[in-house]
Length: 418
Image (cartoon, helix red, strand yellow):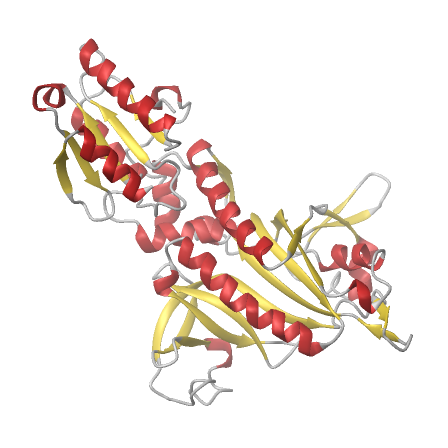
């Protein structure tokens, strides 16, 4: 893509009302735009990152048999009355039409997916299976002050699994712990992300969160380095300040943000809708459920909080908007430089390497500063010096390492990285 064709622009300063690092950097770099507190537009660069996160999650969900669907955001009041959450969920958006009909703007989709599944499950032979979606969620969030980490409208992957018994559900639940770890590893935040014991509420003794250490977080966790597990502050006293796995008390306190969670729903939502199946003896049994959520925007914002630096964004190769930032210097008035930049651009694109080509007529300092702000993993510079020396300047955004390589070495780097 040619940077001159991007309709968005970077900013020298972040909006004064944004205090969160993720929002300040993403807005300055032209990845998102704030419509109102907790509500953001994803611009072309930001949407490319969000879609790559989505594709990583989709691949991992498909690998464990998840079947993708897409459910409505507008949900009938009757379904929420059936589960008792219409009057008990404080952050539920409720909307009415001119006829007086009431609906909820979905913050989650148990009230939709269970009646849906009821139409297709009748026998133990229909189970187990899991269904998931990527869908906008709406929550009346009064503390929308952490950029895209805490939104009123946000994109979430929610998956629901359906089983004949608790043992089968728990086997799948345990498998999902590993699946989530792979998602966070591929997104570049695994080293600072911990499986965290949290209160299970009415579902079970524990649920599990995936918490990433960052000063921007609003949660407090206690980490057992021996087990590489953590405990949420809400249940640390119940655990008598000890690790649930090894019993150790040498726990360190950290500030963190929740990037994913999994719950043993059991019959919490299947029972109100009478979601049942006939077992091998022909007897009716209630379906057992689990659910598994990841907030895509929150995950994107967490990557920014963890990896961003004083110069700007730093994207892992797996979710970067482009693999290479091709920076052309002087091509606007030097046709030979422009021709060389175009040649390199075409070679990259022919090899299916995603490239943002900065073909604008700006000074070198401005281009380099913007390149650091945007945070694409590899910067390749084409200039008059390139034509004279036959060398390209290469910069690794994450390490800051700069090197000079010739054409053949440039494409060796390309293949080794991408």
